[in-house]
Image (cartoon, rainbow, N blue to C red; front, side, top):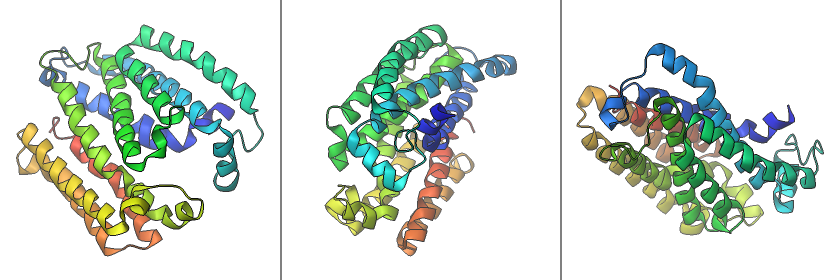
Length: 283
């Protein structure tokens, strides 16, 4: 249960989204030159492997992210149920487990696939948590995009048995578009926490460049990347309708209701827009 508490906050947005990306895109694997379409049985057998890949990489990231004294102090106030502030485990023991997880994560990737995304995620994890990458809000957005791409690519490689750089790198290009989507819009989550972030001196995109400017960047990102993704997949209006509908609803909420409740609701719409993009190569 302690292990689960480290990763509880990220099950929906990282593990579930990565799993969905892998399953959906594997169903059209030939479009990416990543082998034949897996059978239902192959997909079913791959599910535990995909989840193991995602969880092991996420757990390593969480250990890095939550073990520092400043992180423990913040979690004591905002998320006291996490293992370190709840004294379920000591920082020293968490650090020891973290080092052990490097071997486990690599072993998992060697056994089930997704080695390159695993190695890249390790680099981005260190950059974000140990090398000061999270201190700059704009750079943090880019790291979010790159990190998410790794968590999308890993399960996709596990289920297909092929690299995202296969063929003409169509899968890699698709992931690059999604990196752009996430980089320019992931600070949507920061609007709901502006007052709390200001009180503790945390630098976020809305506090750094201004609330209105930050919202406009989200709007440009949603419209621009949805347009590019739709063009990339040559989608008709039916194929693109969910992405545009979810993106439009998200932007309407973003500008119409700027209260904490409204911004919280807008952030809940963000995964729906991403899911709409996921469906573009499938429909």
